[in-house]
Amino acid sequence: MLIDDLRAAAHDEWETFTRHPFVLALAEGTLEPAAFRAYLVQDYRFLVHFARAHALAVLKADTLADMRAAARGIGAILDREMDLHVRYCAGWGITADELEATPEHPANVAYTRFVIDAGLAGDALDLAVALAPCTVGYGDIGRALAADPATVRGAANPYEDWIATYSGADYLDGVDEAIAQLDRLFERRGGPVRMASLTALFKRAATLESAFWQMGLDQASSSTS
Image (cartoon, rainbow, N blue to C red; front, side, top):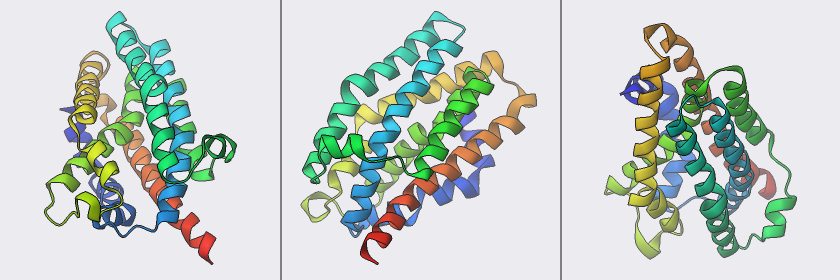
């Protein structure tokens, strides 16, 4: 699978992203609530651009099947994920007005515009590879945390719902579909000649994912200093 080759080529960047201190603290239940709240607010802003990236995938698609796959992604984000995110944020004391009013953090701008620029400058495969660290990475993290006996589960961990979401069948089914779509696109548009550029995209996106975690930690530190 293409994703396996990309993970292997970006081993260091992938490990830094999926084993970031933010993620490890989620697993332990020790993450500062202020860091998680900062992440949740920016993740809402990210979802807005994630929907735009899927809309771009419709434009870049060269088959009706690809257009439908991208459209399903748009529907899932706009019709389900956004509402779920707003309700989840409410449980952490974050209002819908606050989500809308909070400016994007520079790390969020850097990441989301990188993905969209990759799609605008490249083709459907470039866009899918730039999106993969988000979609696939959260699935890898969810699976790993759920499988690790050291992960604190249940009511003892305030981040149990987050872990359950990204290790759950609903989310992981979407991950599997995204991985299959990567392979379909690579079969039509790929080949060894493209691996260097695709790997560079994947590495950069994984690094920007790490910066997104770090943003939450940094904002929490600045608010207490």
